[in-house]
Length: 245
Ligand code: SF4
Image (cartoon, rainbow, N blue to C red; front, side, top):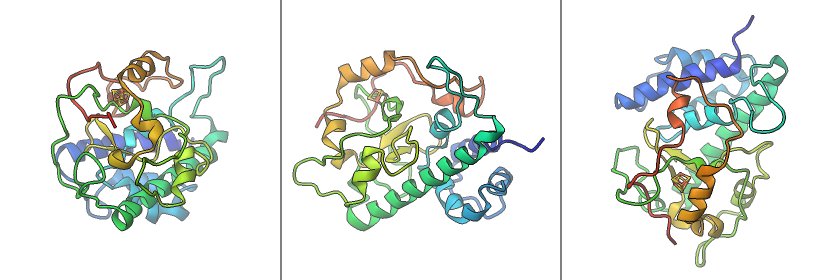
């Protein structure tokens, strides 16, 4: 039986998180065997170059994709096993689309905004400390969404095509906001446009957070000990970014 796309992505995610933890942000070509195996999947080879660039970005939130796109769906009255062979083309398309949106956002931030000031840390690939002593633990769970009203805050103009990405109409099946970045392989996630995020996100407050954390998850937990498992919501703790407008 051929190796499933989910298994290949899970292996890459685990390897990548370890490397980021070792402060290795940009492996040489061929250095990550798990990446080569993933990109060698017949459904991904045609898009291997842009996929590789996105997947090796130090802010790419691979465990979150493992917890959404690639996770079994269990929270409804049906069950979707993402190892089903007939779902392989769907998973491949969703991964390609998500990576393309992530890459475009990276380019947009450099072209239209100041990457040093658009979010809570400078986006220069260095480990600037995240803000501390805030109520948000940066678990990223609230960003597992299909979209938000794409209205920017007063005085800000988003690139026109962001409306489709923000509202969830750009991707075939958006389960995770493409503006969500990961902090160097750690189970901490931040909004890449924190300073200019849509009004709906700016008004999401501590009470909304508590409600969201109490909601059942649609996706099955990842097996214990895997990289994806490490993104399960953390208990509230006094660290994170200030989400107040
Ligand atoms: S702690 Fe709450 S507001 Fe912060 S990322 Fe998690 S769900 Fe969102």
